[in-house]
Length: 69
Image (cartoon, rainbow, N blue to C red):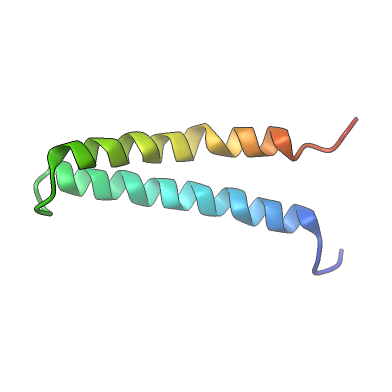
């Protein structure tokens, strides 16, 4: 495999989306626990966004980038 393998780049993007989703959930939980002085609705929004980033977006990207049969 060469360094310009699109599968490696796509895998890295999917993993990055998952990691950022987990970071959003953690930040939302910190806001919800009042560790940070931000509006509570922002914490809930970050949690929802993070869960979508972890569970939905990687599947959509994988389906979009699937090799033709």
